Figure 1 (cartoon, rainbow, N blue to C red):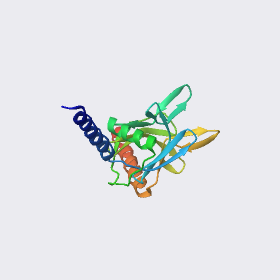
Figure 2: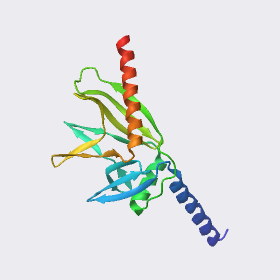
Figure 3: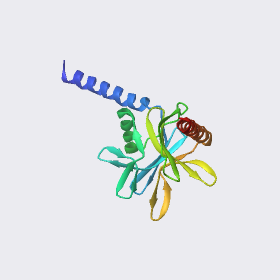
Figure 4: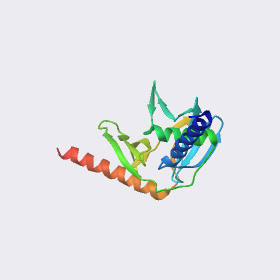
Length: 188
């Protein structure tokens, strides 16, 4: 094989791999904004993740820092999705929404002795990203606390819903799962 044919073959394989990465994700980056050293992205016009840092050709998702400990609140579930995000941010390239965002409730760990935090749980969106959250109790009832961090004395959201219908469906599912599991535990 001549050098020209080898170069052409390498180019074709590279193009196929790059296009498959951009076609891969069920979640698409539909909006990117940059804020100082971090990025805010909207996925599928449905959910927003803020304070993402692009560093050494990889991304760092926000972490909650409590007393003497850091808590991971986000997880990227597939290497291909991580690479898709890196490419989208480094090239400032958005896509149009291709599918509806699907979700499933994941872990659910009930706390028995905490007055406000009732459970830790998580939601997986389109099998690409997992978001950790808490089920909280207040005077007005149960509610979901989504990832946020205190910056300069003010609480800032690291995750939020753009699509209010999706938020309602997700939170209803999480609260129903909690109540059901909690009722079963009490009846034993």
